[in-house]
Length: 363
Ligand code: ADP
Ligand code: MG
Image (cartoon, rainbow, N blue to C red):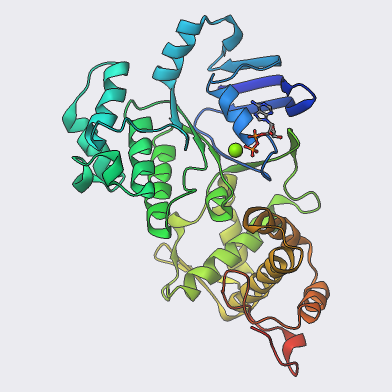
């Protein structure tokens, strides 16, 4: 049997009449990368707090690396957290009177021995080598968050728990952090990442979606392969839209639970992509299919965020689940209903469809 790092049975948390976590059975294998998504208030933070022993469940079992956590004393829990878990939580503040380097070294000190060389190298890894001597107050929010990430990773924890790790980062720094996660995953660390960001969520091998403290199936009516094919087409199209003319490096595509290579092979046979020299590019047929996907996605966003007023996070997530269910004629129906919008709520272009032919389009 495969080794589980996290195993919960009937895990439940109640606060009076509120049950943010409701009989959750969760198994996460060693080395797995799992993203946890779901609307705000669905219990994501509660789950991570319990998984990191910051909170205790009202009922249910939690085994970390085979050890029943309820049998540990408070002191043993602190030691287990320090040795096994790297926490990347937004509310975990840095010590204001210590520099970035010293904040990272302090985590080393509590674990074993501090080593300025290693701490500095970890800051380099998160792109902050040149800021090592700065105090938290001299760093931007995104930089502080990266110091927290360096601090969480410095002791090489087997399990990394992150709550919205890219929440306050710009695109470039989000890329830095995602690359770091890819490296950690490749080195065999187990990652559990709570995120609202669909692109960050997609990087994981498996996605868990929470709703009212329960796990729900992310796309109930679609098989994983169909959904991943849609997502691969979309990613390749966005890559080309962003100027990646020569195609994407196939190693940079999400793993999709190990399905990426077989899916690319099938898409190649279907004439949707061309693969050569480790790069994947859309064929003309593929580009057309992809534009249709991007169109559906952005129309769904325009509907949920623009019209149904679902706020950026919920709207984006709803759109992400809904787009896969849209038939071409439904997409045209939404497009007409929205009076053939030219751009999505993020200002990205919506590729025109057949229905947009004679209609004047709104931006
Ligand atoms: P998420 O991280 O998905 O946004 P949370 O896990 O923070 O959700 O919260 C889930 C639900 O539990 C919310 O309805 C929240 O109000 C409630 N909750 C969380 N912590 C407490 C607490 N300490 N006391 C009472 N209710 C809480
Ligand atoms: Mg939360």
